[in-house]
Image (cartoon, rainbow, N blue to C red; front, side, top):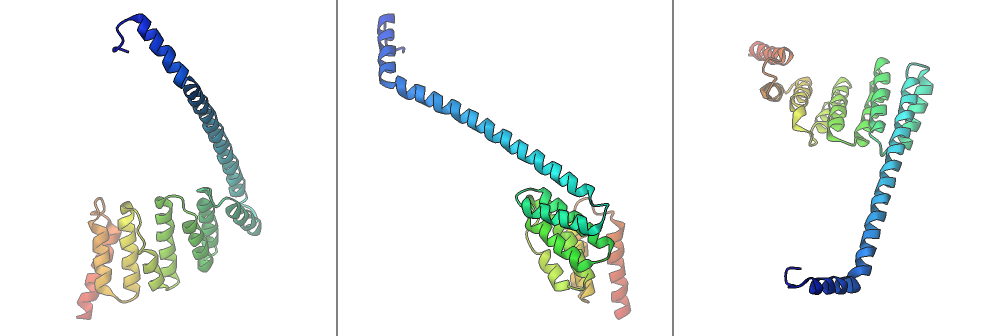
Length: 212
């Protein structure tokens, strides 16, 4: 309003502005307020949905220590009804753990694949993928294990991924590839004192010496 020299001119300018733009401004404010209310209603409904899902997940987990068939039925039903929730992967992990207690490795693999398919973040996907690869190695499915580990996963899981690759290569008799993978795992920052990894490398060195 600095272009106006007198208070009267300023008042007239304000009147003119509101005459031309007042309806649009008021409408904009009304829409903005309505949007704010709508956003809060959406957030409230989202929170309510998350609470309901969390409660349902807890109920399923409480049945884990009971009869296996009941838990399996409850867990699979929960996953089917909550595929958009991170709880679906956690439930699949619980099913995999239950199957592993019976050494039912094919069933463990099925549940871990479900965890991967329903993973909502890369961390959960990485954990499920590494566990699946180890189960596949247990089942002597070495090519499948390497394929499972070939997808892009967070760098923070590199050591575990490389170690699992080394295990698969070793089982295939590919000693050099196994050595490279174990070394890559050991080279990850913080793993330099990993005794288990170092032992695997040492064992490979001894095998190479014997072979010669």
